[in-house]
Image (cartoon, rainbow over all chains, first blue to last red; front, side):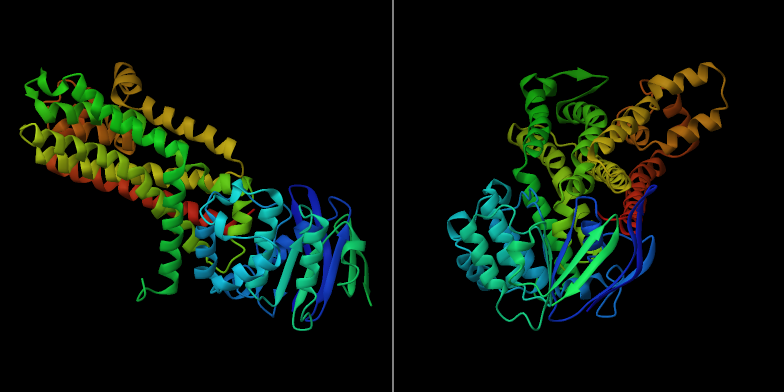
Length: 212
Length: 282
């Protein structure tokens, strides 16, 4: 599903990703780990098509994520580490997502309820006025409602309390065989039960890649 | 909306959401109050009752309005728009919003359209309000001036919106974008007749060069065109304006003054788009 071939990314003179070649397949549930500055976010952003590679290439289902961004992103869900300060109301944000990605609005409500977040009383509030935990639950609900083949979560539980973390992992653990899930995390113990592969990065390189 | 292509639907959706977001923003309230307040202030100050250089009533009010607008509209548009892309990039909003299957073209041009409506409408509505109020008070409506100013404001808004989107795409941080905006505004302001160009004439610089520089400046073109209806002899306009209208017909110049800034705006917005798609997005 995702293949990187000799992928490198430089910012000025700093080499953030150094000749990374990995292949992530359907059914893989991957914990992507490493210290700050190891290159995890750079790799994610290259996969999402946000960065132009300095060398090498990324292919998702055989397609380039920059040249074929609509096709690629149609099958990708992404939750960032920190919810961005979007000023749109939840209603407007739901409208943007349902129109741009053909997501059923009812599914967003459904998954938000599963995450113990009630959208209705907050529907006309600006997204950025919600608490950190509410924002993260809402973004997780959107990612699940999108029913994507590729799920990318960058430290998704950073703002969640233990109960909400349990809800999140419970929802993720259903029907993982048809998907590829990628978790950027510093806490392997949290995702240990749902991942079947661990990739450890350091100084822009893949140091270890273990499947089990 | 049902018969529109998905691409156009997405573009209009982005424009609509940007419009809604802008209308709620503090800067938009201040922006609208400034231009609406200007018109109200002119009425309160009795501008319509005064007579200067032979014109009075609504014509006089519109002239005053346009003269103030020449100075403040560009900087308002620049500082409010320049952060639209760079600010979203800084705050990681762009990273999230572009994680959905929407093309960069739909996103960028949707933002341009939404922001254009936001910056043009208050300026136009303030002028339209003046006309409606004037009619209500029984004043003669100077339709020729009203339509000319509508055209000029439209093209002036396009020019600076395009420049702002270009800067916004070019620089990574919104602080830098703001700094460049101020520089562009001061630079163009300095190249209006009164200041630098008069100085250049005194120093006997080739007049063709001076006129060329003046013609390149959308603010100067806007100024000359706005006042040319009132003062065909251009006694109050400065030397460059005199040269310009001495070499071409007034109607030709008015057409140029509307088309040229419009083309500048479209070109800059287009270059901004090229940069937006060629550079790293976040």
